[in-house]
Length: 504
Ligand code: MFK
Ligand code: FAD
Image (cartoon, rainbow, N blue to C red):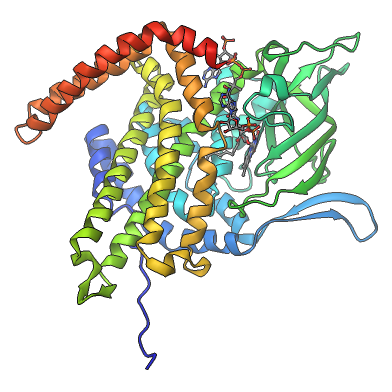
């Protein structure tokens, strides 16, 4: 009695086992590039299911703590993170998780390679993808703005492969009054100083990865009469370092760490800015438009994270189905269970193809090789893919937990943590409805050109598919669906202006 113990699902090499990822890369990359990145990803695929997974689990078990005072009563506001969290930062540098995208060793294909590597890293990394997302987003802003001085110098740290030199960045937008509506919600003010820097005063309500080295943040520049401009036109973008060489905070106080449903590995704080020294990096009043460069990168990371969580849960559920024996056979041999697994697999595969496509488009844009159609697609799909994959991830991960029966609900199987960490993906970096409105905004602003780009891109893919006999029937069905969509889009185009105005 009691001698049976269920085997735990095991994880193999996450690259070697992912035929779709390998196939997608083979399709998108030139043969030489594919051969080189495959070597790296094959090695990394083993590292993520061994060392990196253990580190990620250690971070979940040892969440960050805030030490507000030293033993002598001085305010220090130290965020104490576990050694595994620090090691994940070192690994991120060594593996070039940010550097790959900016060294551009593989020109336009570098982003595809980076997306694949982040996708493998994410579900093992104890949400370290979050600081990396903000780091990549900050790098993008500093590169686009061609910043000089301290912000320009930061670029070398953000893209470094040397752990001693590597920095991560925060992204402080949300205040108490509003995270979606930053134009109304931002009360932080920036006072110009004689040396050309600014001092920031305000309160940021959510700041994740507050152990980062630097951040980008929004504030309103105060004029000599003490006035600020309200709304979006009053917002400018600033760079600041969190601590000085001695580790003292730069005019900041950490009010407290947030008590969160998930992402507990991550220090998310409420922060008082009390004279933080900062550098203006956007044109005055162009803060939102400038930080949008960051938002578009972090939204792509959000989609990578969402698909990676789906992939992890489906892989584990599939493996478990080969071990769990019920009603006289393994659960993999129960057709109803197989159908459930198949539906989850389809969602996951669709998501993976979408994020690889984002890597392709981003790579084209960043190497000046994008056509107008590519640029329109990139702008449109960034919001759509963020909102869609986040919603799907909640559905797939929840279904995935059910595939383990009661064990899926247990904390110490690590499955419950994946569900908790997935729930945030629909909220941060723009909620679903806010991104839906952004999509409408893009439609209106481009006077329908983004839709034409989308339609043309799908047409091209359908035409290619219809040349392969085994895909021809599906291509015909897609062709019919496209015809119907075109009719609906025409109607939508006409209404989008008034819809957007009404929604806002
Ligand atoms: C798994 C890893 C994932 C990463 C995790 C990171 C941790 C979490 C960090 C966060 O959550 S950071 C906070 C994220 N916050 C948001 O996502 C805010 C959501 N709200 C929006 O996106 C609003 O739509 C927005 C703040 C952008 C609206 O602001 P406004 O003030 O109403 O601005 P408006 O008028 O829509 O846009 C101002 C300018 O920016 C316009 O340009 P122009 O002035 O030239 O006309 C817009 O076209 C431009 N813009 C806005 N969004 C853009 C954009 N441009 C390009 N891309 C975009 N996405
Ligand atoms: P609200 O804007 O108040 O939204 C409430 C509801 O209203 C939502 O359902 C929303 O969809 C809806 N809504 C809002 N506007 C509209 C509209 N126009 N039409 C229809 N519906 C609308 N922020 C940072 O800046 N930096 C960080 O590092 C950071 N880290 C975070 C970490 C975690 C774990 C979490 C949970 C949040 C973090 N955030 C961070 C904040 C996050 O970006 C915001 O919470 C998010 O953008 C939503 O803003 P809000 O909380 O003000 O919600």
